[in-house]
Length: 536
Image (cartoon, rainbow, N blue to C red; front, side):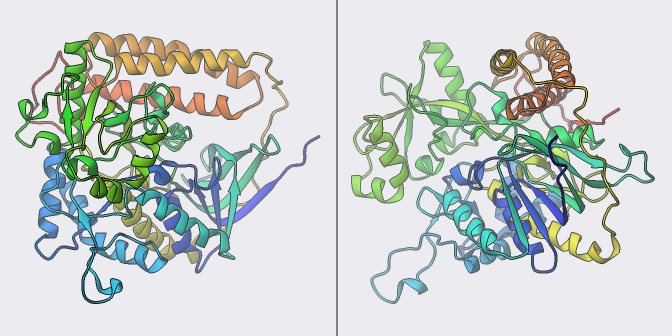
């Protein structure tokens, strides 16, 4: 019989990207933190983020301008007070990163020391000013590596790697009074056993759910775990129809999930048809610097119109040393596939990239369930509206992690440790001998989501997707009830749940706005508001 393992901590942080690490490091000064990572500590979306982080550092830029650009990109659905809160707290969040040792690029100077040089700011689609701090074209990696090394060294942070969160434990599920989170069941992938964590507070920092689509720029861990767990625990979910498809992912048979940063277009790269002609000026006055939803739809339109497998991103007209200096990671990676970006156009396609909706929270990251916080891509704060402005994603992680930390710290002394939690019961289940069923369902789900709930949608496609989703849910629930859990089963269970939420939100929106485009409802609704789903 396997040993019953129960961990205990003041705060359980589920997710180890920028949001989870920032929260853990802020709280660890005065409390014990367990930091749960589904894979290796670095394997999350933060590590692969190339572009940078938006913040007002230029004396010619203003917070008001950052707010205005975010509102425009959000297509009328941003929560303006949240946008202001984020932009106003951006500088302090960035200063904290700099103090932690994150090395953002600086301008070259001919006189004075490099330490006194201003930061090199780049510009991306939808921004009216240069305000993106970056570390070459590997900003996420610089942030992730810097923060995770500090977390590993901190005596008050216990890092659990290769652990899946299965479900939240709440007073309601335990038939105890109130509506408060008590901890979570977690799957130890190393020992293949279920363990328990009890904690005063739990924070979801699990990222988005772009793995629900066949083509995605995200790593394999982006399976919507936090959104699904929060929904099953009674939390409201909002705006799941707004899935951002990054316009430019490398199109190559041997390349997997490799994104080509928006900063390429910010520094002058053009999008071209296979015949070499540009097409973005025909779709938007901002051309290649239009927001991502417009660029992704334009690429999708041209590919379908021409029957082409891809379009091309071309920065070869810029000096080679400039390209290599600003985009060393992309240059090196593309060379591995025989593409020299200093001389060749790069084949690109859109891919699912960012989840703008998620678990509803307030300005402190607090969800509908007492003691449960959601920060980063897993959350719906109202910042992004119908489309996320480039480089506001890591910013949201930092700003709301700091806000959540302050809120949790103010309550720490008032909340007792939960009592004994029941151990996981697997007495009625057996080992599966049909893993092929999971693989089959996984492929079917991601394929119909891409075909029916992708960049362009219709009422008929959405209805078809919902029917397929219901059939899969029934199969997967039956499988989950009868067999011991595994990583693939847990992820599939969560993915099919978030797929249903995406489809239901998309069906409720009878208009086209931002990232949601329905050919049966091509116009905007002047009375549009966020789509909110309430669990039964």
